[in-house]
Image 1: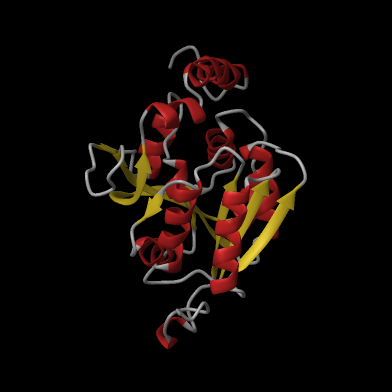
Image 2: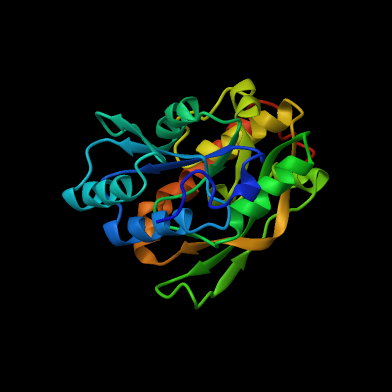
Length: 256
């Protein structure tokens, strides 16, 4: 069994960090198990995993959580919500439970490559002014070894500022951020389908520095079921509404 405090002594004096993940009843227990395995098999282990149970879960999902709690009793911090609150509220609450300023996000059905945490946390250690850091994602349907699409995002702060006026400049499942910066910007809010985009824009408005790494550190499932679960046609409708909101707030002008 791995040492949940850091795998080896070389990390003892390094920056501590939390992983924030939310799960709800419609998730696949198999995919959830794979996601958690990708977390506990990192080359640099987190100091804690804050797992938000967004409402009542299936027995299969509860069994996965119990298995990992048994294997890593000091690693998991479970936050149980009596009713499903939606991703925005689940993450808003989860952030408050994170013990460390550096927080890495993870979805309950995606897979992080083994070096992900090591690479991202090192960037935070080397850049004290950095508030938000994302990466590319590799999309797959069934076999994680068969990536069919790489979803790229803008890399530099200036490119992110320009991109944000038209579309989300980050792959949410890849981000790491400083908790104090997220709280200063107002934390996550229950903005359906755009909980993350809404937060990034408020962080940009507050002048927080952010960037993306030009490499794939997370593998993301695609396909009809994921499309339906993550929004489907409703996502497109809400996207237009969200863009309208940005224009009304002055983030987008008529000249853009």
